[in-house]
Length: 151
Image (tube, rainbow, N blue to C red):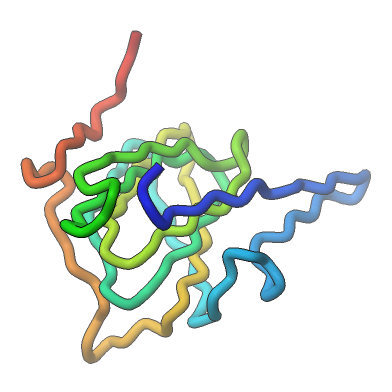
């Protein structure tokens, strides 16, 4: 696992009325601070990648559909420099994925319907000076191929 990345198993509590799932609490060991909460989606087969933040820590939860979330550690001083992590998150694997600053990340919808991600970052989005640094999803700078791996 990439240094600084954390995973929290999420407990789904179903009953005859529906279900409840806590995502992030201020008394969680991995909670640092609250910036905002937002929803982002991807249609089937769509890849949204790559970017990282210098200040912000992200807390991703896929609440509908399934996503392949991929991380790349480009931090020169990290013990996991150059490592790639791949996570399959969503309805069939409910987890919170915490992504630290300077770790590139992206996702691809792998379900047959639109997938939805809730992100609870530690910072408020700054329109004047966004804390986002981007690369093309298919760049050769990151050793990852977004194609489906059959076999």
